[in-house]
Length: 561
Image 1 (tube, helix red, strand yellow):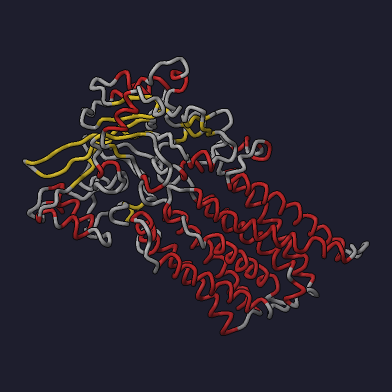
Image 2 (tube, rainbow, N blue to C red; image 1 turned 60 degrees about the horizontal axis):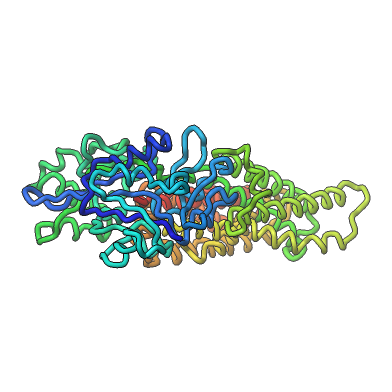
């Protein structure tokens, strides 16, 4: 049994009865949607056509939201419906990053993720979802794909149907008859001409994805959106001989590499497409807490890697490092845990990751990796404290037994997030196979920088200079050859890279690059000792933080619906 929707866009009249019925059935709060309607117009007066697209959860056969959920709050039923349990959800927002269809939202009262659940409570008593029963044009049909006598199965078998983002491999089960591609593909229609009645609001810290500039237009004018939505002001329209909507698109596209020819070629036979009605969705589920957590986790793991490798770095005789680095690592591990818990919408449920984990989720796996690392790190630190305190000295076999498991768990703690971001299938920019390696390199760089600051004055930091320079050099190489200069596989990945290097987050990105280069130059020119060493370590750490912030936010810049 596989329940599915068929939406006949040739019948849809854009009346919003489906979204209203859905809101009434589930008491969906104001500003949130389980089902919504998007209007797209094509052409220009007098040859204009408006199409309507009903968007919602696609109840995928391979649902990425179920895979990434760390506590199995999202689950797939035997009948194919992807349902959720708000009593279990911890509000990590990972499902929002995994869903390519922008179908999930955080309920403002429950602080849990919710979405269309196919009205499973009605399906169980053989009733259709209200969105289907209320539709006056019979544009929404529901049924079992495995039941060949059902109308849905027959339409899917005999009609030309489209699905959203088939390239994601999710096998969506919402099928569109005569679906408008530019409405079903995010970013294919431009909202720069303004929306009907009012502009859709966007956060002031988010860029206009069509211009790459926050709250600004391609021409620098203040559009109807500015800080509340995208747009190009009427004064810009009047400067051309093109109709307002077409002019707005052309002006906005001028700031986006590779799109200008499409929009300015409308008079050569191409019809402009524009979004004239849509709903707002949260565009940055993972904010500053996630950026900070990646940074603090790198310092925590890196400090223990350097401390454990001290004998091979000729640093074993320095009590300032052997004790200071582990204490610093534990401090930043505690800060990391704080950021992880505070970022949850239901932080009081954080412990449930350990008692009902979804072993397919790297968020759940990461919780156990961090726990194991924390236990080993605490044992190592306690042994070091006993060694330097003058009391009974732990036998050498204790350190020999702990050293390599500690290093392995530290590197795993740094690198597992790369696999977690890869499970966020909605974010094309994060689908970088080199990301786990990059995070490990950042961990070594952060640990070297922090340890350098401990030893720069009054200690022997000579061995840390080459380690820091080498790690930062590999870090820069992975950025430029793996993220900046590479030809990205998708438009969304390219837009995210543009947002990071030339858009709103360019200041953070280039600040991180400059600070990293200054750290390398300082070590090479003045050595790793003295105040130059302190400044080198500080510049390296701040550079890593600035880069993490730009990378995290830029990956979430392209719209999902």
